[in-house]
View: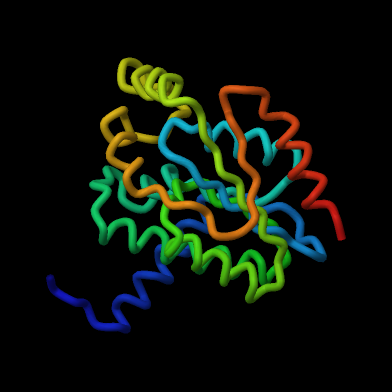
Length: 203
């Protein structure tokens, strides 16, 4: 593996972050006590739908990893280096948003605790309210959703993950190390949405 010079990597990071910031425009207004909402869940668990419903109830900057990966790479390969670049840039943007007083939500699988730890530190550094949401659904329902994605992808569905990706990623899922909200997306998600909105509005 060829390692690029540090300055070149730094310049790439700044460029990637700039492209992400362009993609998530327009930004909501700054608030006094911004929150960082982190979604965690396997493909097909309903993250993007949940994210859309939450943002419609409480304006915040939405970083949807599937959309941002394609914004950065066009035809993504889902390589480790690609993921490193994507999430390094996302972390930089989240730092900036919270520093500006803008609430944000990260829609990504976030299955491993070592990856979530970096998000914990971002929230802690800015003294931001951290809201962790674990999304799940019964495997038969997830498989049905993912197979439907393979058979006839919806224009608004930006994920490429099918049932085989779900089965592989199940092995990577680790328990969330901080207090969190668990949501079964095969049931009514509105009570969870309302609870999170209330939590975000609390001083």
